[in-house]
Length: 440
Image 1 (spheres, rainbow, N blue to C red):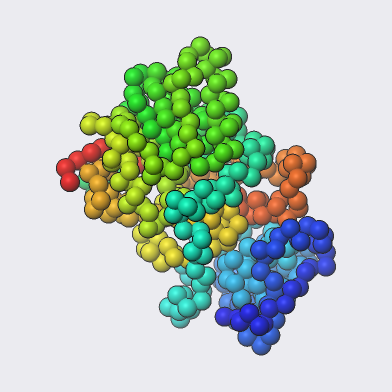
Image 2: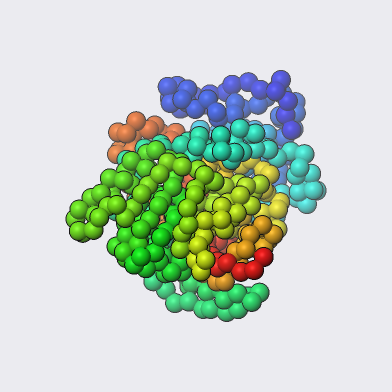
């Protein structure tokens, strides 16, 4: 909505110069007639939305308001020029705050499809940002995309994850209901108890996906996306042999160390686990089970066929596949799949969240894999993220000591709470999907 000619750098006076100089990607506040018009429209829409949702907005930090606008002019300028990216960037610069960020974002996320008027939604293609070409998940680009997040620092992730170093949704102990949906049994887990044991819930999640894939003594297992090695260790304890592939050199190094330590301590051969720095598309061999936990989100919409074709190609006769995936509704996936968001810009370049329908369409059209069961537990991700964020905020000094700055602290806090809001509002879900090979 604003031309480059309208741009001027406007550094907030209460943010340290050396801090913001590290953040050159933060879009400068735009000025000029078009920018002022965009800001005015954004303010009008924002005021109407927050009034309708019952969110209290104030410029007084001591008011107890849901949102406190420290610099309203900057906030509305960013919101008007850059939409939700501007909304997130204005939090990074300190233009606004919220005492309970997660709760405020959840209220907004619950109404996300109705935040802007219908006439603006119809013009969406004309004003939303498009993903940069160098963030497409080609074999050339994917390593860099992964490194920008997972190679930040193993110590950073250790500062807020539980001792298993599992960076995906936990599965807490709850009741469940199973019903047939589209001829496939679907189990939905109830909301977890607040404050449940996270490490225990992560172990339960890993065991559930290994069970779904039929991993047992003697199984040959391929893991796509290593994490920091916990799944590989737990599969090895079952007597399986595992090949795990990752594109994060930081994860590979620590995962290998953790595997070696577990093998020595527990008395099994570390030869059971092989961890390679390798793109999933380059995997060869034959495997009785293929498992992948929240790696599909890094594949990209146009590469879903390649991902599932690779799995189909390496799966041995009679083998099983179990994938844990963050999903969204098919309608929202279609509406947003070519949108570049704050999460893409700052957290997961090249990321894409599929729908179950898209996954089924791709597997039926391109592979012999057939969905035979799924377990949905989105509310468990909301609790997982809440605990991660609580631990991260408490680890502030530890994170600063690693060389990260105040803006990074705000960015990561916003990321964790923004994500939690997606699951708490049911805009997002997380599911374990099980496949066997059928007849194409």
